[in-house]
Image 1: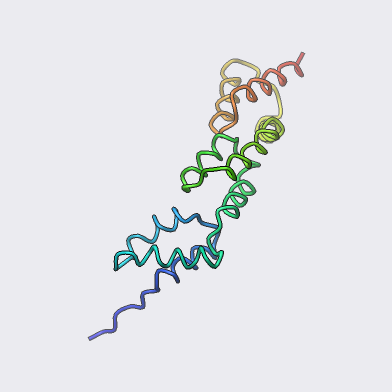
Image 2: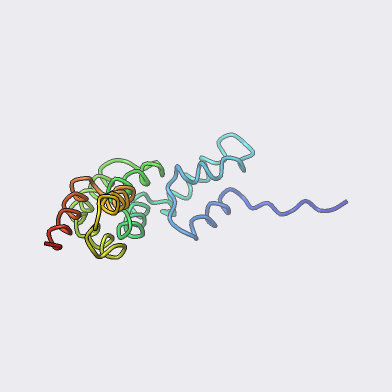
Length: 153
């Protein structure tokens, strides 16, 4: 008879996930729920990790903003934070900071990808779509595309 394979504890699994990147409590619950064998076991493990500051919403928000701000607009980052189960004052503050830099971030993305004004309506639509799908506000996109066309004149 063969030995059963080693199964790490829920806390061990959570620590492994947290060693790779910051995770919110909601994310960990979602990922670890299939491995819980007793009711309340997962909540107890996560409570312990949260009490020891292994799970910290502020760090998760900071991490997402740091990793994604150069490539995504405020609305996409807001959606990503919401999907991690994060909301509240800290998220609102982080998003307010991102809104202040949205134009410069979108312009940097546009320059990296296109660096020249659209020559026809099809190209213009492609540039607009590129920025909008990355979550930049439509008003910011309009300013960048119009500004690029003004450069052409």
